[in-house]
Length: 632
Image 1: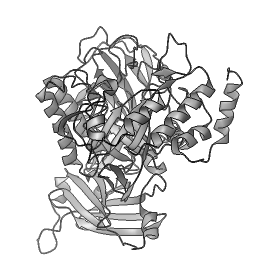
Image 2: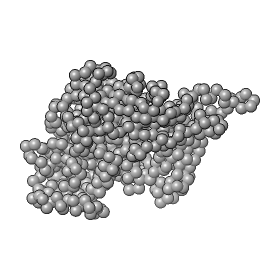
Image 3: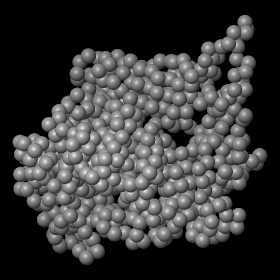
Image 4: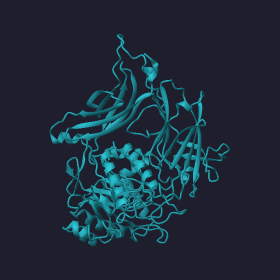
């Protein structure tokens, strides 16, 4: 057999979990760890031939964090990274890909002195084929420059402060590499992209794949004995559940693409059907093995992935999951950690956050002003957690900001639309980056255009054009209201005449809730997407929340009263409490920043869901130990 067409040899280093869970190959290795570092504050933005590599940094932690070993929260305009690695030889029909999961904000990459790629956008992955830049020796070198002007408000930056010290609701900056860097050895003809969706009405899994073919030489002699050309490439898919075959098929690759529907055997009886459906209560995933073979049946590429059966819809004023109404019980999650900033300390920290969210009675999170690691979405898929994905905001409205945010938002959708956990897209929050929506038709068109573009790329999920207020195009009317009085909340959202009395007369946050356009409260769900924000802990003059409790018991009493009120309001299709954890100067989390609960998890869960749930005794013990040191 021709060895040139074999799947690349396994080169799996002990590098932890795969950074791209929806498209895994064995032949990868992590480049996380110690890199040389240079802050570039006095350097021109060009390859620094005489850079002083006088410091070390732990990738993937940003230099602002303690975990990086730098812990400098000052202003950077550019930072530089360098490291070497040992590369095994590759054949003429293999390629080496260098992946970056996220670099904030503009990255330029050199391998062995050759420029291999440039990428703009701090929250989305990119890669470079570096095969041409490899030296004929084991040791290779990569250099990365990340430019990130701290004063630039026209780029998507989320909660990263433009002042030197964090103020109000903004936090320390995240500069440079802040997600995993990794290498992958692949076949020159390979599976390039893989996307999954599902259709419950037809009981089908839908597959979209792009095939990359740059191995023309290997196909030159591909004909049968008569001289007739052989059939094109074939992509085969095998879906299993707990090791049992669910479906399998094989498809001819046409013009480098595969768009197919994989029919499943419909059991017909609801009880059996429901065991295959993905939901927070039963997060069923189908393991997928995808193989690419040539006309002779020789294996060119193989990836492991997963898919699911589930549907999301809006029916009248209700949110619908798998054909049934579901009350959204979300918590605002900003995804920061004490010593590591926006980067999770490890994979276990992501999994544990999801576990804590579910133990507190929530069925989902609103990821706020952050595009989270694909590993978080993997655990949300695996453990059954709904996710609202929200684009980090720019804070100026300019032609430049429009281009930047739009380009990155489309890349976010491309990366994440196969994850069943994601049930809503949110391109804008609280009119950030579009500050004059009531007066500016151009800004309204911008929001409407991203709403429609998102719906065009992914018609399967609801889109919230501008969460919080000033809705001009949305499938769900999201409202931010931090009134801490349950009685007033009940009066405001318990009314029958929602369209005229609530949406036209009320002004939570001082803003009108709808601006006409493509919104109608009679036909759309209303979700209280930010409320609560009750602070507890920290010095009052150094920390804040939207209101404050003096003791643990007062915090619990207020949370119970507020959640009991919100859960009982028929006008609401769901809610999102602010917030999961304390975050720097904000102390309105249900958990401290180190994830220690402020309240018994069982009591929080009962208030959140109205049901008495199971709980983690170990966490309640940590809470009781904490109370022994506090005034309760």
